[in-house]
Amino acid sequence: MPIEDLARSDVVTAAPETPVTDLAATMDEENVGSIVITNDETPVGIVTDRDLAVRVLGDAADPAERTAEDVMTDDLYTTEPDAGFYEAATLMAEHGIRRLPIREDDALVGIITADDITELLADEQQHLGEIIRGQRPEY
Image (tube, rainbow, N blue to C red; front, top):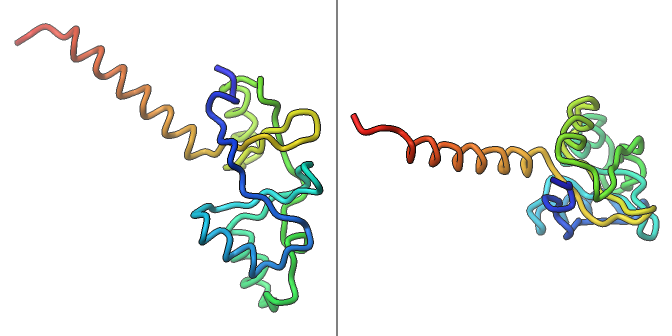
């Protein structure tokens, strides 16, 4: 199954110069745990709620003086829309990441999260359970 079938296309993004206070407010408003940082449409980093906690609060930094560029993870792993589900899950596991932006050429086109994958697997398990229950002999 291509990852584009699972990925969300409504990615929350911000520019590198966005103040971290704005990032936190956007995460709250959009009910997301991460924001992909882009230059034009090209993903260049990601800021997670954990990044804000560790790199701002943990460093006792003044949030009014920090920007996305100051706190983002810039060694961003991405994948193409036609990558397979297993390929994307393996990439996430190998690098210990919970969010994987999807890019086509250099443009951001979606994102897949560990929660999305977990939800898919749970749905598949439920369907398998229904098949098993339907084929089980009566006792």
